Length: 80
Image: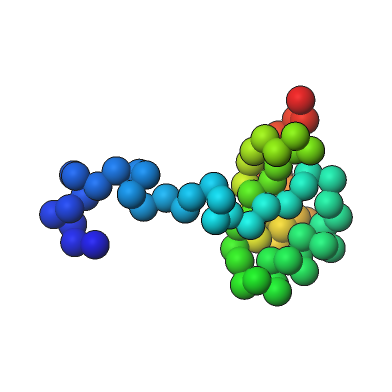
């Protein structure tokens, strides 16, 4: 997309639709999540609650930081 279209392009025009996201449940194991990321060549997964409500996004890079012991870079969201 050329820069001259930015002012008239909405977020909705460029976002990934909710139905197109690969989702995981918040209680899935980290091993299962890593396998999903690798198998589908993804860099981010949508994390959902049992009721289907979006909790947040889990980035592959956050898992890498966790594995490297850089847990201060991860901001967990408390479950409601």
